[in-house]
Image (cartoon, rainbow, N blue to C red):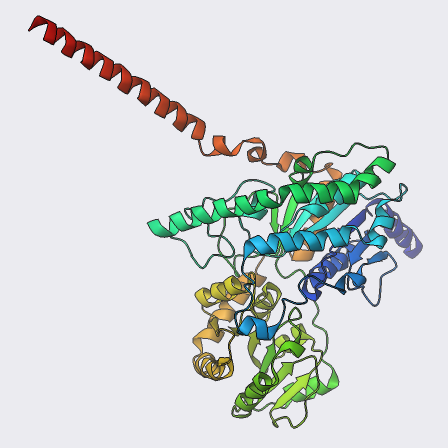
Length: 514
């Protein structure tokens, strides 16, 4: 009987096992964590996974093949920009969307043209049932699905916003749908509605400005591979709007209650292991023996700590030394002469630290992964945002009631001390994040189960065409009824002219009679 069950299990795994390509070439640790989340859940679902990544998984699964693009970290376009001192001196604007779109296209081109990626796509024997491609201010990775002639799913690392939803449906109405980079929250005033409308127009202008370069990169990166398979390279506009679904790293507990299409799947928290990993012995001891609790301080992985001025680091240490709390600071370098209550670590298992009952506060840059983990584990946060969507992530957390913000500057340590006193001195912040944590966890399906269900559904229905929004085929002017408005205006012009002619004719008749 046991042998029968074993054979049946192996048979079922073989029948329902699909070949998935997960494309996350962006050279950033946080984005690789999201890619690993997909890989882990798909492998648990019994699928074969090929993973394009700059951060290869150290203990690979037998069903996992990795395409290493780690050399893309060399001469990374953001290396000279991601600098604490430059940001503090306001020498760079990391919120400029025009620059962001153009830089992200360069990063994507580098990923697609990497020799290991080209080796994969130039092999006609390679076949996949589905591609999962990261959307990060560019659409180039949709070309993988063209090469392998299979459906694809987008993955967005952010809250729903116009340029994401436009790929599978249409943008939200700017009268009540604020962009992910906007500081505004509905309901909007008249001036705010005008501002959001202008912002959407600006985003479309940016996308248009990069469209030709993106199409050329698509033809260069994927054209030879498609030709080698004897296929026709479709127009880029056809391909980038052909995604079957959009996996979104979002949940209503973290952001707004947006209206989204049926093929938008919110899976926030999917990168977090369902079973919390044990802490290393040294950190376990520190957290267990902290009499007043622990403050965890990490500014993420994108901005190297070596670019932080030494006097700035010392100012943080001096400020932390005045607190009664134990502080664990993740910093990629060693420090001597630390205060007794401060522990600097070059690597920290963030989820395991936040999961510890003695963790009272998280000081973070406000990345979406970090804000998701604070809600997942029920820990309030102080955000020190640096760039991109971090400002909005922190602002949403403030509006939700479990966060405070301190801007990055040379006076940050002093302001941070005040914020620590406020957030740990008032239980409302901790109570609110625990309330949101309940909403976050109280879902019908776990994120990993959703990923596998939707992946299999898209493959088995040959692209889930039944979920495609008709809005994709409606021109922009028709969505806004501009043709109807033009017809009405034309009709009014004709009527006004006829009335003028009629009145003019009557006046002439009266003059003749007189």
